[in-house]
Image 1 (tube, helix red, strand yellow):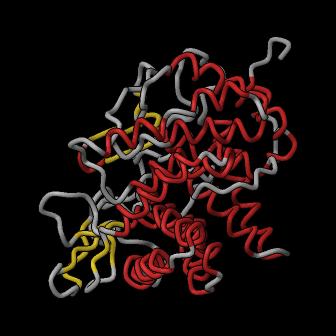
Image 2 (image 1 turned 90 degrees about the vertical axis):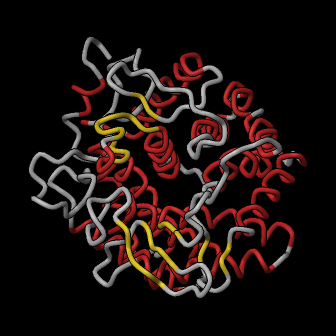
Length: 384
């Protein structure tokens, strides 16, 4: 870089397209370092020291690091990424056979491990593991309320907007073995997301509580948002991306329109630098509130799905919005010039109401940043 740091060089860029090949090269260098730094860790959060933690295998984020590796393998053809990713689905399957806390997020865990491994290598064991996870997820469906149950223990009537992203596991299974029951369950839950989680203005509820016996909606709960009526930005990103994915699998325009409604609200609420605050309407206003780069990267990837679904001028508007978000993340929120830092993005927010993981790096933020850049670089395989 001739003595000029990546950040200094890219600060001058007005368009992501002008620096994308260089950014992709820097990203490969970053992931190569992460392979050495992370080893066998299952990362979730990196705090001020820049060191990723090591969570248990049934923690909901365990698929994102292998997912980064599989994307890099497909994009480069280089074996070191495949070698580092190969065993993760087997480890997750072994945990399935023990006492565990797997729940509605098995899509986050098995789509970027078993399912993409099968798509890229035709490994029969990976296929079996993906289908096993789809069966597990389908078993969480509440027939009366038409929702996938969230978490475990006593919360039998709770469902969350995050599950929008896990529906791809069901739709993949339906296509893979020709069994429409997976498609039926996926569509039924997607209908609940579109009709009850996504509000008229395009903001979303994080948690909805239903009577598990009758299916009647009881109330909205704030969850990781500022309150029951607030607008948690990552929840919007989950819904945007998840509904766009559901449209890709089903071709049903109601899901496309649902994704667009959320996208329009999300984009209208962005601050000047296009990286959202953790909630769009916290009590007391936005001044001093932290950002959430994970919401930004997930939404950017979802916007690129919308752009692909809508060729022409309308789709280009979504693509331009995604590139604007990604340019801001690249220029101002990444660790390019911090080689000892184990994450890619800074300033993520996990659960602010609980005081957990505020202004940190989050592995799912890293994953969706890689996923979105890969799409711009021509990546066609879809995990979610």
